Amino acid sequence: MSRSHSSEEAFSGNVSSSRNTLYILGVRVDAVTFDETLACVETFIADGRPHQLVTVNPEFVMAAQSDAEFRRVINASALALPDGVGVWWASRRLGRPLPERIPGVDLVERLAALSADRGYRLYFLGAMPGVADKAAEVLRARYPGVVVAGTYAGSPRPEEEDAIIARIHAARPHVLLVAYGAPAQDHWIARNLDRLGVPVCIGVGGSFDYIAGVHPRAPHWLRRWGLEWLHRLVTQPWRWRRMLALPRFAWRVLWKSNV
Image (tube, rainbow, N blue to C red; front, side, top):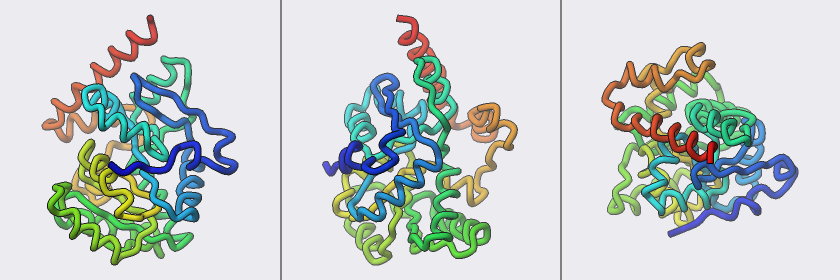
């Protein structure tokens, strides 16, 4: 299994002075802002070596309780970003408040803006056929000059890895965004990180679906109040089994904070 370079090494430079890492139920989360995250991305691109970033939410934390390899992937990542209001809440309950949430959809948007400004090449991998293409089209309209070097649905099956890696090599991206859903996308990146050779590789879950308009995103006021999970439950009721992780997560955090 490939590993990204150590987080201490990855945070070399002025970003490291403000870094604060906490563990929620044994799962690492880095207390970084959006600006610090984008600064890290640029540092990783300049470095040129492959780095894996993960977007940690309560479902990640609960899955990692029974999937030791997934927990290892998260904890060994170059950057473990705080995604999800539950993680933000837990940090405060545990007395280690995070400065900001880094939702995956917003991160993709910020990376598109950065690409338009700096010329960094992005590659969209995953989602249903046609969805990544539509997401790229939307982002090109929002951020003129964004460089989407390639899109491909593919799958996380091991037998497809060689062909997918060949496509990515041909596109020469600086940033690879993988939308296979967790934990499949994160295992896939970790397994292929060194072979990919892409400076920044990030699992982005359903971000392409939201950007492409396949699923409506919660209104801004709901997101501001931390109720995006409720909007997802109403608009995507088939997710209810997965969302059972949220009350279990809250109970575990409350128990831990009271012992």
